[in-house]
Image (tube, rainbow, N blue to C red; front, side, top):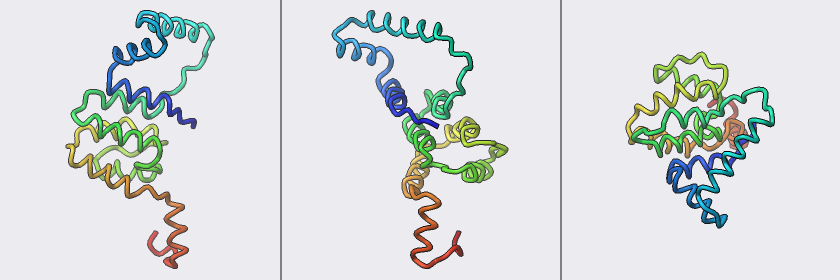
Amino acid sequence: MKIDFLTIEVELLLLKYGDAAIIKALAEAQGITADQVLQRLDAARTQKRQSGAKAKPRKAAIEIVKEVILGAENERELMDLAIRFQNKRFLPELKDVKRFSERNGIPSNFSSRDAAAKPIFEKLRLLGRERLDDLLGSSESNDESQFARLSRQLIEGEGEKDL
């Protein structure tokens, strides 16, 4: 799966500043009017439609999550968690997703992490800021992959007893 950081950054800018401010900034950077920017966007959309993309690509988890959290009271914290989810720094493996789902009353019959994104973030949207901050803090301290933890334990002589 290809991670398109530019798209994520643009989405964050759009959430932070809104469409109008971004279009105005693009116009100023290019030395053109906002109308010309919109015309170029329309032309690009038309060209893309005519290029004949046959299969509609599946939405990335971050796009689905963005729709779920849009307008939420804790949108910034939820977006941070969404980015960490996308980068596998929050609930990095399917088993973690299933465990989290079971503990929080979410049906856990997911076939992939991406399939779980919408129901998980619908539940997270209902949580308060303090609980989201706790989750953000725990995902920061849990940046270590399972392989890294296993390696560290083997090196320290703990073996597999604590896995």
